[in-house]
Image (cartoon, rainbow, N blue to C red; front, side):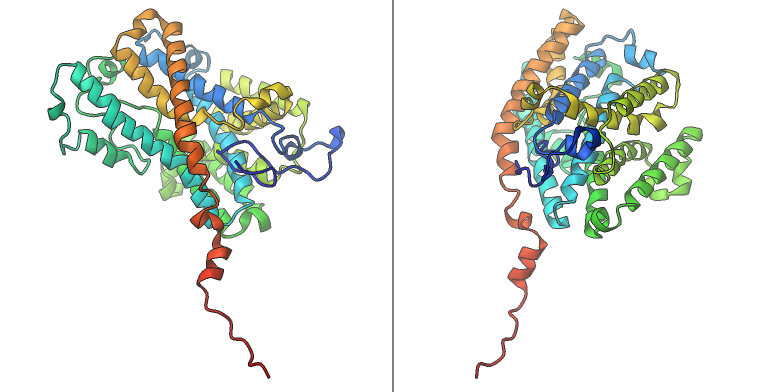
Length: 409
């Protein structure tokens, strides 16, 4: 954890505190969220749990329909809304982090927050969960460890750089879980694909940090956000057409998620000017819900819901601020939730019904998230000021030749 003198994006919810307590009538969103006076931790934890509840429909085989999708004209599900909330909040926190670090420090700290726990989850999947399922299905353990690209080593090799290339291992879960029967192939973790896009968003901020945009030319950030709005409009009008406009941004998921992320980042760099106002929050919530119901949420949803979540984090009572800070379990819940649900489905827990299945998955995922935070994530973040975390200036001073001193008389 950083002190309140600086923010650490996903490591926690600490944001620079103002030197003087502001007047409530002039409170900005940045001032309202400053220090540890916010509930971003619990909001992110709730969003991670919401993803589990959403996945329960398809993983548990409750194929009668997703109620949120039906209510929103298939614009969104509970899971996609939660992921959007994650990206909006992350955009705010990561941009704040970029404003207090050089590019080497920034990338190093983002690496520590994402990769160690992610790699551990991959190892747990390939070397613990998968072999157990393999053996309990009546097959010899000796036949599990092969060099096949659809085996455990192929799973690790295909996914270690965040871009998911292998969702499954052999045919495990293919015909033994409702989700496996639905898609027709093995899937261990259907949630981790978003981490690749989150990392790409981090790299957008890293580029801005490198050129000093966040501090000296911050107007370029809302301009970039407007670009992604335009690309989203183009894609909505003609799916895939954005590729013709900006070929290297042809991925519609990247456009959608980066747009949401940059909404949060834009609020971050103008956080002293963006008011903390209940009237704006109510308007944002209403506009988000109206477009969610009648259409247009992909355009109006990201900025409105991002502002609402940030406002909510500052508005919630102080008692909520203790949850998720200093221990952030949301990432662990997210990276283990799908795996836990597939394992539970394999042993038939889904037959208990939607709510018991979801609640049991939440409890087990929380336990794994606790282990992930205390054994991996927190320990990794202790290295944030080590090596590359010392910053470019430190290493420049270490490697540059000593200056020539004038001869003494």
